[in-house]
Length: 110
Length: 121
Image 1 (cartoon, chains in turn yellow, purple):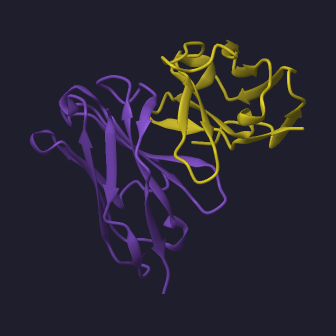
Image 2 (tube, each protein chain N blue to C red):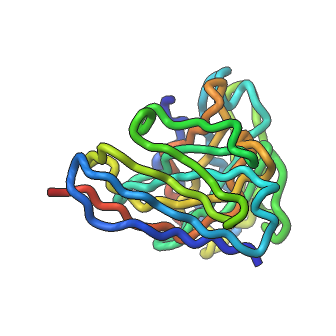
């Protein structure tokens, strides 16, 4: 159950777009549609922003989008805003019938 | 409004036990699988356990398998995590989270605020 691989940090300026990658294997990200993304602000619980690779829950801004290619999932945030500064985690169902999270990516809005 | 409230955390010595509870409201609890997820101090999220809607499918992370036991009582809208043989590296904020469907293959979508577990002598 190795954690999925995410960059430790990314940054962007207001209005720009950024992409966070999440790399796993054919036993998790590459093998299932059950890939999700979470946003976590300090001191708060995680918030689901993308589920099943590319679906947004009701109420989540359409500036957030998800995709997958092979064993790598990606989260793109367009039109960066100061409020987007947070930690982002990916997660996937696995062949072992468990779930695994990525190590997390800290997004800084410069 | 969906609400998940965890309780039962605290300071415990290595090797001892603790039982966490999660009380759900605002949705039909028996229709959903549930997850336990933990977050160590300054660390990322770690999936701990999942249980499907009728308890006939349970699973655990390797790090807790054989020491932790997940259960639920649909009549009481409650989820539990029995934690035995606790170790210092189990120290974390423990979240309960609702899955998006009846099996824990579905992503956690609603989260509680967590209960702190600290394992130290």
